[in-house]
Length: 121
Image (cartoon, rainbow, N blue to C red; front, side, top):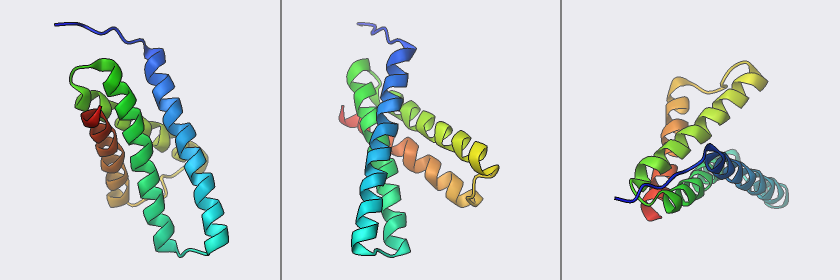
């Protein structure tokens, strides 16, 4: 079995890529919100889609590089994405600003998006 050596720098690059993608998509969302005057429920759905897309692509890139157990590596990338998101939110707000159910749902969306990306790689 071929073992692929991956540096931690590669994982950080994938994570950085996912956050750059998140930033670009959030800017696009804010522009569309300004132009189209969307409601709160539409924006909430769009944010969920952005989380899933960003983690999907991070999981996809990681899975392509790893060549085995891609779903597991994608799951780890989605979990790392959520962890950074949670730490930044706690640092800025001193609270998550989410109820327990929303916190768990966001984790599962991020982890699931990464795992799905790994599976498709």
